[in-house]
Image (tube, rainbow, N blue to C red; front, top):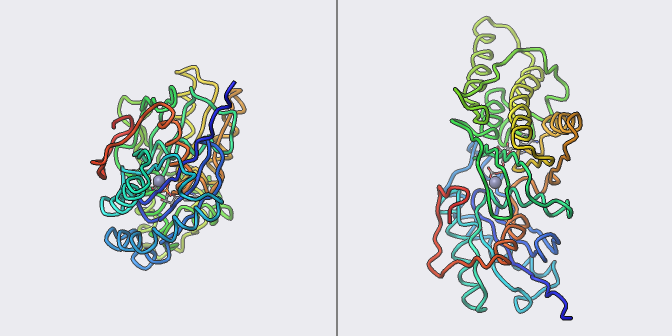
Length: 342
Ligand code: KG4
Ligand code: ZN
């Protein structure tokens, strides 16, 4: 009987402000995962500046790919396919990764696989949880996206709900800026909230019309801004840690509530979280407890696999590869690519 051949994928991610490359074997074994972050550069402007991001990607991408190959101990001759994020994201940033992936695949005559960024975030859960298989519910919470997704099978997604306005991470970043914590705000709010009282201030938990799954975070963000302005006008000093903790609780309460309605309505026994905000300690603790109370298995990636990275693109790309999905040489960046579309 012939042994199953290992599939080794070179994966590239450049959709926002991280230039990343990884070598991933059989979708779940990370041989290398190199991330060059531009955070220090964008910090100066309080957020990601698209043109600076593109320029930095073009400067770094070859170095990052070489680093990923060296660390994995593989040469390009041992790579079976090249996977790359082609959307959603910043168009100029995505184009750098897509052009690079095409050039490598073309030169080495390798299959090219365009990967959806959110599918990558979801697939990050496969890397450290070798036993995790669909179906499961996944809450994707990042700087640009807030999606509640039923992962019916590898590559097959049903979107139950999404945000109607700000993404969860965006709300964290905006509130952080308002209380003077700087960019990126999520990790800073997470840290400061540990010193605050989450029940000090009652911020609104927004529910959207008739949808039990959709999210809205602009209301809670405005409530925080109004609270701060109110204190300033009355010349009262507000407690930043209390604001951070109370805001964080308002957001995580809604995320946990919606996820629990999802697992119950769909009869799912497994719940995963993904995306930058999935590394939030309060969200992890609250979600873990809610799952435990209901006998649901809870999965989450390590923080380094929550924020943008290429290992997650290699994991998603592997399942596309074994299902025969290939991209043509006309693969282009699709800034507003929808999950489940190709
Ligand atoms: O997934 P990601 O790296 O990029 C996107 O695809 O958007 O997510 C970045 C977002 C930022 O908004 C950042 O503030 C947030 O994730 N974030 C956090 C934490 N770590 C990162 N938000 C809350 N708590 C954290 N610990
Ligand atoms: Zn992301």
